[in-house]
Structure formats: structure tokens, C-alpha cells
Length: 266
Image (cartoon, one colour):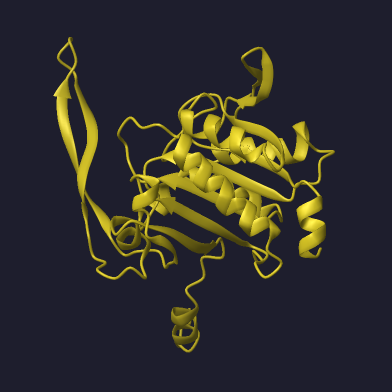
């Protein structure tokens, strides 16, 4: 499809997330995407952050029509982000040929090791597995924030990716976009980045409930291992939007070349 045809034809976009269908990130993004696309929503019914790429196989899925201001907004699924994308593409909107799957906008960064745990990234990964070009979008803050500006920026980037004939998301690849949480005029630009090597130094807080039984809260701090803006986490810390290409083939190709020469016998 050439650029002119792309610009004339509205793309069909499935939108999901991991913060839940009522989260401000998905609400704002959908409104902006509607300016140039046919938008369909299938997202988790409630908060599903950090569930990774889990899917539901031992229990039935339930789903509900979700309304906003008296109009149908989309389908709310009692399941994971990957569940939502899978059932959205294969069942609820099975007659739609989707051009893009977009996941977000996530409330919090999905850079470095966070990518592995992210339900937002996993929703986009599910889209890629289903053969649809996919994009995950996150805003790098957990603070209460107005998503109007980030939604406008995200939609502008997605529109550019869709319309530019020189941009192609390869089969099995998704784009992981992180937007720094600063005023729009403070954003320095866009960088294509690698996944960073920074990681969480985990710990557990032990507390007691009113009956005296212990319970545990996962906590910790991020250990920054990346000092170059060629890595996602450092790029956004320096007020760049980062775009990281990811794929779901987890083979370590360098290690494979070494290990295949091992003399392993039983």
C-alpha cells in the first residue's frame, strides 16, 4: 500500500492496555486515534499491570460492553491484556481486518527489565503473534497526570508510522514507545533505542493484618546500568521519546552459535 492510499484509507486499529478499560491513558488515546482511524477497543475490565504475557486457559472468560457518556466505548474483558487482544481479534471483531494493534497509554515506564513483566507490552506482543503490526505506548510516570498531551503525541507518532511508506513494522516485531513525562515543549525529539540493562533490586516489606497474620508487599529500587541514550531508560530520562523494536523470538542467537558446538551426550 503506497503512502497516498494509506493517507486516504482510515486504518482499523484495535486498542487495548493493562491498566483497565477505564484508565485515563486508554481513554485519551482512543479519542486522539479516532481523528484518523477506525478504532475498536478490547481491554481488561480491571487493573492488570505486570501480568506479563499470561493467558487464561483453565477458567472461562467473561466480557461486557463498556459505555462512556452513553456510547459504546468497547469490550471489557475479565482477563489479561493478552486475553483481551486475542479475543478482540479472533472473536468480538473477527470481521475486521486490523491494520494495527495499539496498547496503552500505560501509566508508568516500560523500559529495560520492566518490558519483561509488562502487560502493556504483552498486549502488543499478542498482536504481533497474530500477525498484526503492533505498538505499545507508555508514559514514564506513576504520578497523577493529565493524559491529553501524551495522547496527542502518541497519536501523532502512530499516524506517522501508519502513513509513511518508508516505515514498516516487520513480521513478528512490535514497537515499544516510551514518552517522557514532561511538558511537550521540553521533549527533545525521538530516538530509536535498545532495551536497557537496568533492573530492579527487589525486596519485600512484611506487614501484619488486623488478625496478626503476615502479608508481603513487593518493593525495591531501580538499579541504573545504562548511561547512553542509545538505551530506552536513559533516552527518556534525557527527555527523548524512545522507540524500541522488540520481537517475541527469545532465542539468544549469539549463545546458540556457541552452544550448538558443545559436545553434549547422554
